Image 1 (cartoon, helix red, strand yellow):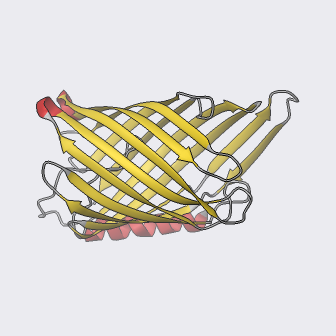
Image 2 (cartoon, rainbow, N blue to C red):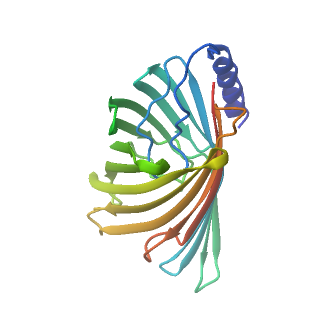
Length: 267
């Protein structure tokens, strides 16, 4: 943990030194809140830190009640060009507690999560903005918090501005995931469709529908959720965003509720 804290401090120091106060920057555009991904990239030569400050999920399925906590999970970005950035995200601490409702037995696992590396390229700008966001997952998770396998995928976020302060966002994703039997990979897909509205005072309110499909040979699954979010960028600091949201599962295989809050800062 001390190593992680030291690395974070070094990165923040480097980010502060690399900031260009005289640059004319585009509007702040983090990937949070919500399950969708922003179609924009970070400005060249700048860093951005997006932190999932707290994330709590409850799932009741298959006779089990599972509560998951994620604390202070960072995503760090750097703008290589104005249309290309690199991104890394890691959960430095997560806790999963599972209770068997029939027997009353409770088990807990805690530790570090997997490391995700992204390279996002904005390939179209204008009325419709489109990005390609390939990623790879490296198995850094503590035992029982991950499957110990390398996985990868491609995220394709799209966005369009609508009249009267509204915006439409669509994120399609395809993944190559390890089979639960450990004998190869299978496909998984997800789609997020969201609407957001700019409100007075620097607020932005959002609503999303999300669906995910996993085609594991051991058994296919489908998850769906209805998600609400809010973000605030203060007038005095255009490089800062505070946000939060709640996600509601719409079928039995989706966690019933997820609550989260976080912060984003551009340097």
